[in-house]
Length: 194
Image (tube, rainbow, N blue to C red):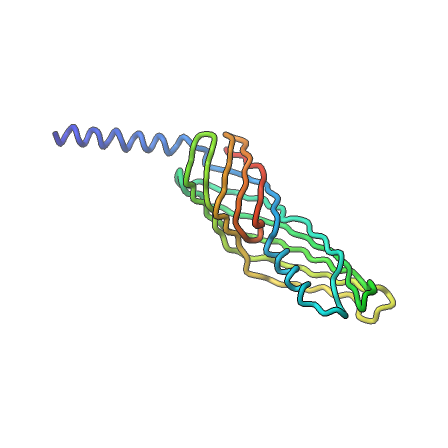
């Protein structure tokens, strides 16, 4: 009886090992998101500016992200995210445009993914990561303004938490995530597995 039990255990372990190797171990993703932490931070700062000095007609671009993950098991992947966000708008003083404001955000985040459902053509997962955002702020004023031009650099603690992610496809997948952080509250894109 012991020999039969050991034989069944060995067969189970070999089967599990084969199943673990039937998935693609690497993936590269590109995405676009809505509602990054940079956007929310800028909107908050704009709300607390005074009536005398304001930013108006601000446009936001991004977050655009590229992400790499390597699966260390069928359910866990480790990797990194690079995200880019840009905003531009007018600086107004007492209602008159006196210059322009531009902000650039470059973010690097080490991250981990946990797959809850992992089928051949369909997956559900969560993701968490914490990293740094490098912000460059440029303020350019009209020539007749005595304030002059200004460039400021900051390093900010940032991250991404995707509570719910869904992907569909085999090698080339479409995906969407819901969460919060520098990649956005809602993001979607394409993922290539190899």
